[in-house]
Image 1 (cartoon, rainbow, N blue to C red):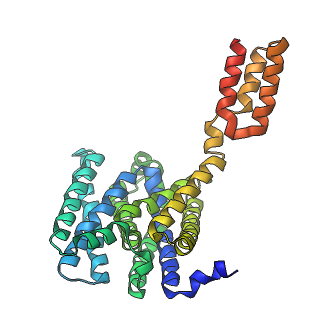
Image 2: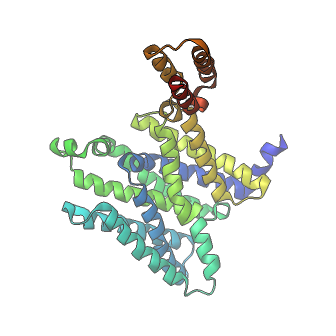
Image 3: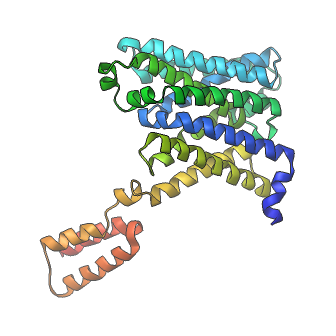
Length: 328
């Protein structure tokens, strides 16, 4: 029992848990739109461009709050810059994202390299320091999460319409351009929430991975949001346990747990591996078309039973074996 309760006797672990919950809520609300719209590259770019804003705050000697605000300004500028460059098809979206990504990230590294503590500062910004989250950090993150939550709930019908079918939404009178720009800004704010706690590199993973796992179990938007937030919170708890008992880095442990949960979901979900791999159904179809006799029929029957028992794990082998036996 002590194994379960010991971590939470430390205040830094309590703050880390609260921080993880805040990140999970913000990422869950926005991450589903990132997955549905295929904006993972944008989330990655916004996460990295925050380095420039954080670097400016670091150079001028700002504290945690100023670093977070600087990262937020850089993230929002990136989102608006992408929207400005892509409006009316001036540039492809991926091209605009690449330009903003490279420019801001290079600026951030350049500014941090001027500091004597370059390696320490860059490392903490890249992978975060969730165990070092202060109450001030939590307050700032909670405010940003509340802004994201209110905005998403207030414009949920429009955001849903634009996410699934922007052309029909435009014909129906929805201000698609405004909604798309607003969505980019919300993605930027959500990555700011994750940035301060899990760093530049892992912020995108917290935004995308729980949402991708939720998509495997539901296609209803609100349900996906709740599932993504729950998966993020579960990942935080398991990751913090791993960090405490195995002496591992907390941020990467949380993200790796989320990836593992997504992998398990992919195997077990009806829309995951079970749907992708052929199973006993293919054997039955082949048998209906051609019913060999003798040893081939017996071999195919045995193979079919094994496939039925093995289920999804042996699906590919069943398909290959059935084909080979039917040709022999």
